[in-house]
Amino acid sequence: MFIGCLLFILLLIPSESAASNSALDLKLNKIIEVYNLVPCERSESGPRSELGEKFFKSKELSGNRDISCETCHIDEQAFADGLPIAVGVGGEGESVIRLSHGGGALVQRNAFTLFERGNSQFRGFFWDGKVESLDDTTYSPFGDRASLGFNSPLSVAAILPLTERDEFLGPYSLIRDNDLQAAVGDTLYQDRYVALSKAIRERVWADVELARATAASGVTYDSFELADIGNAIADFIQSEFSCPESKWNDFLSGDSSALSEVEKKGAVSFFGAARCAGCHSPPLFSDFKYHGIGTPQGEFGPQSRARDLGRASVTNLSKDMYLFRTPPLIAVSKTAPYGHNGVFPTLESVVLHHVNPVAFFLKNPDYNKGGELLRLGRYIDSRSKKLRYIEISSVEKLAAITAFLETL
Amino acid sequence: MTSFKVVVGFFCVAWIFKQVFMPLSAAAFYSQEYMRLVVECDVAMESAWYGGSNQDSESKAQEIHLLDCHEYDKARKKMLFLGLPETYLSWLGLRSLEMYQRPASEFTEAHRFRER
Image 1 (cartoon, rainbow over the protein chains, first blue to last red):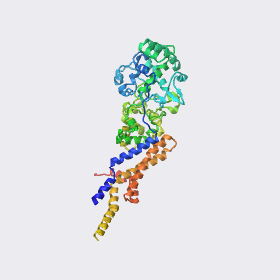
Image 2 (tube, chains in turn cyan, brown):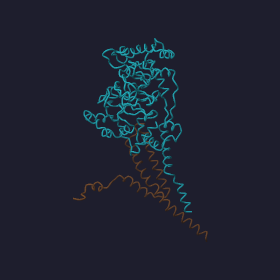
Image 3 (cartoon, rainbow over the protein chains, first blue to last red):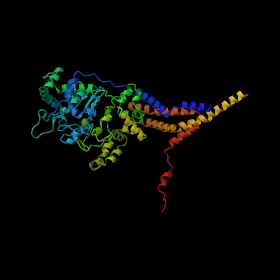
């Protein structure tokens, strides 16, 4: 009888692992309920998607015909480029090869992935939100023009790089400008739009394949504007880069075994104690607001050493200094390095920086020398007050959060 | 008479099982986990207090974080059901919250001369 009782009590007490999984699933169900989480769905192909793909891959849009969108949004790199900051015009090759070539212009900031940029809930584009949709109005360097002819803020964002010297137009030349540079001259964005529309129109209509595809989409030579390119690329991005496969989406679709126990623990911390979802809010894991985590300035690039003011360069407000748009986390584990200037080489390092900015500077003493020694306070002071509520009580929990991020 | 002895014997064993074996087993199985949950619930409640509830995102995070207290409650009820007294659980709670307190001797010991 005693053995029978022993068996009875052993049956009564479930195994530790089973109990833990059951508690985790209960918490995850609560998370799904509280955050109203649903699996993403792939977008339908837009009417101009095929034309958009042609523009996306065409070097005809760059001044010296040496770069296209896909140069920095590389298929094998989850449509980022794997570099701290992108290398624009004048470079050769892709990713690390492009950087080591040494001849390309360094672009202001880290190139981001294109996943879910076409999602209707995606409101702010670029690290400083220079293209932003608020109350159905799109704000951008193009001013009022942003509402004319463009189908979405993504359409505006898609053509902004075309107007930049380091990304598409080409560097200043003492000898001779290319035709696109000659057209835009020293104009500002609104005038640059008109000038560049005309100059690129010539190139598009001179390219048989692009001209045929553009005409087939209903755009005529006379009506052609940069917005037509933006709308086409936006359609392509919307259909091509929507809802990438992920373990997290499989889990939300009902496959509870899609996540391991550690990943589930990470998800619970992410949405709960660690408060990550406070800014990295689902479904795109961004609140599209501007926050600081005390990211140091990069070592190289046009805006290194205290000169990248972040959101303040758009709003001209001192309170926005060193703030950047909360980066969405879709496919985040595949888009290293991290931060607006790519100073964080790994996911672990950037997650840790949220809770402990000191660790980075101890590990990288070069960021704590010279002028930076006297400037670090600025970046640290810009840290969001939300960060003080993060509660991660062990390195195992930190590792679990990183494991969860790898499922997105 | 024999059947009476069997019944008494059965009840004796059952009594020992309920009053001794079950509580001891519960203490052995659940004490560590209970102490961990006490700390986690304490942290969750404290975070919820300081985090405030002005923002929707913070309220949601608190709601999830406070589920740790639900787990604590479940463990507590399970241990009570298995016969552990309130006083034992209170003692475990105190122990878990004082777990991080270290005696001064640990800090002073390193500064003592071992030999001169």
